[in-house]
Length: 93
Image (cartoon, rainbow, N blue to C red; front, top):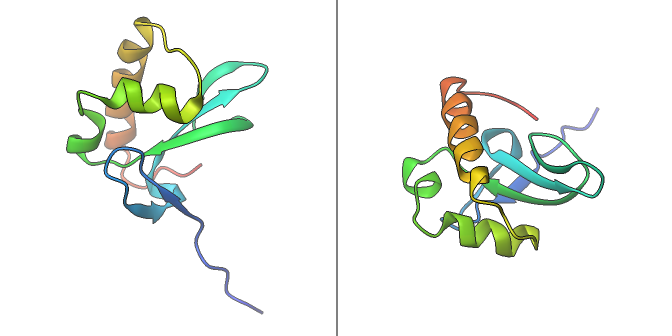
């Protein structure tokens, strides 16, 4: 039996590489729009660091990574998701 390497992804804010299971996944699903932790399509990942998710330019970085315009109410939903994400230390995808 071979041991598989963890899937590594890049945080769009700090530009560091982490295991995919330790990152918040935001996906621009082609049918359902913006989704957290699931969906198929263009995705962006943000680490659990407060510095990264409270960055003043995070909305612009997400828009560029997902290639979509984010509405102002998205930030409220994003803040709720990131607080619930930080409550669970090993939340997987």
